[in-house]
Image (cartoon, rainbow over all chains, first blue to last red; front, top):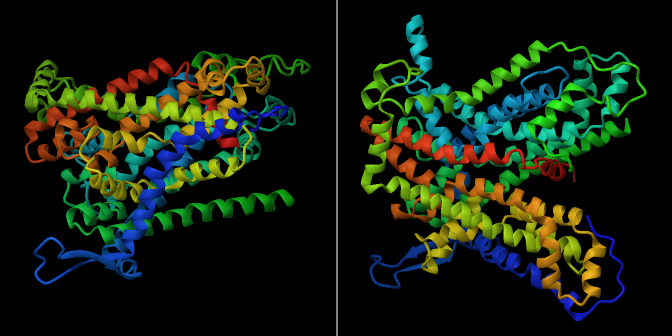
Length: 310
Length: 306
């Protein structure tokens, strides 16, 4: 990472240059990362108190609330249900998406497989489609009146499930995320597969390993770091789900305004105008996200270490 | 991090794997038999990914009546009418949304690339007190969920009277921790230390060394940063959803969403939403097809490995 530049002389300009170069980034970080986070924490620890009838200019003022907003949020059953919904959704999305990404990456890297330029590009294509538009396209494909699936089911005389309600709704939402995310993760894993030296495969092949054995015993362990990383970022992204359920909302009554915790934050802040509890909920979501993602990272790291010492 | 990932080079590599690297083995090229099952699975995956795109292409050719009456994958006859209707909808606000998206994504990605370039260069080339601390703090920004940022950003910008403006969507997205990271990786790989030192010997100022010597060397990496950021801004929904209320300033994602919201009660608007969705994905897909030959995704693997 660091350049091995000999340090012969250090003029004044050289010494101050990096600080000047980093000034724009530091300013933007302070204004749009540090300040908002600090403000969110401050808001979450305060509440609005209204004097008398709430008339007049100074009738509303913010007072210290301690952890009141947090205890309110943590005992809020709506938030709890939202969290459970998103955990269920994540339990479908992450294994399926990363499993498919790994499978496709391994297949692309297998000998004598044809059409790879086409399939690689086609599977990566959804990355170029914004989440809102992906949800919109799939939303139409889930609608009985316009969907080809229902047309086929209808012709075959099979029952037609409502995809936008109850259990199928989870699958419907998960499918959108899987569709949108598989290609990108596939490329990350595939790129790291390609960096395995060819000698490794050759040696295994001379020893009589099949392609499947090479994939399972050699390739997967060697790309484990990139699998861990895609997992880590998928956890963060999945727990933040917002645009897909929001987009499906106009198409069905089963998606409430507080379907995911993030939607609840939006609803609290802009629907109810209660920015203090919205801030507390946002902080809780952020903390839970970081705990889960870093917890996973630690678990994965200690496991690789154990395997290395074995 | 060197080989471009173009399909043609892949094809060559697949045809003769490792034959060049292990000349000692007497095996020769493998027999030209197609691995049917893996190929079939990949083709299935590709079809799954293309299905919604294919559907929207066909659905956009149907008139409102045909949409509900004819078989889904049978083209209709109303594409030109749909296009006219969409362009006429509220005096062509659709094209304004497209223009806004191009502005947000184009200008936003440009500014973001500039900030990433100068910061990544500074972090890669100079050794100074607090360098790793600065880098780690910037990187922590990647982990910050957008939600904890967006709501307070809105409230703070409201205090500065800046909400519901172009700036409110542009400014928060300029600093991209991932962009800074990529630029740093790229600068330390592409800009040799002795070139910088030679520039100093010749009496060039630090800024001049950066703009005249280092920046041209970093261009391929910066193209990647620009494209990542362009896609990220174009696809963004949460920030404009929170910041904007005047639909003249909406990006295309938000515009289509409001159109769908209104259209859910009036199926007559469905065809507009469908045609609008198709036209909204065309620019990005076209961009992808053009640049994927040059876009070094290997940079990503660099990101993964370290």
